[in-house]
Amino acid sequence: MSSNIRITRICQHCGNEFEARTTVTRCCSDRCAKQAYKARKRAEKVENSNKETIIVKSQPIEAIKAKEFLTVRDASKLLNCSRQTVYNLINAGNLKAVNIKLKKTLIKRSEVDKLFA
Ligand SMILES: [Zn+2]
Image (cartoon, rainbow, N blue to C red):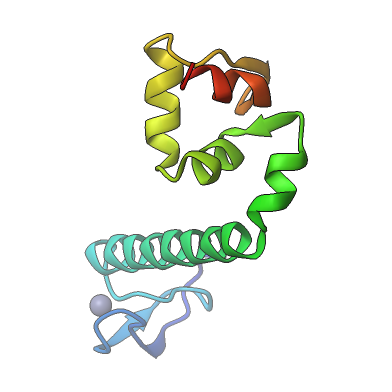
């Protein structure tokens, strides 16, 4: 895309006018591009987190109780704690869980009950 063209553009990040050498350049400098990227990633994270919250909220606890095998998210809802706490319990050996595949941990419903035995 690089060529001899010169286009006056407005930086998406700082709003300053600059001369771009390609038609797809969005930021005036490497620094701005990096900051814009960071801001975008941050916004994505917040959005994903919000989506997750909605999913958890929309999942009634009764439906989780009826399941035989729980995800870490289910277990955290059931135990009224964070997912990290569930992972901590698993890592400490207090809660038996199985990694059926990478990033997919299942916990047997009865194992959660054993915590209180
Ligand atoms: Zn800029």
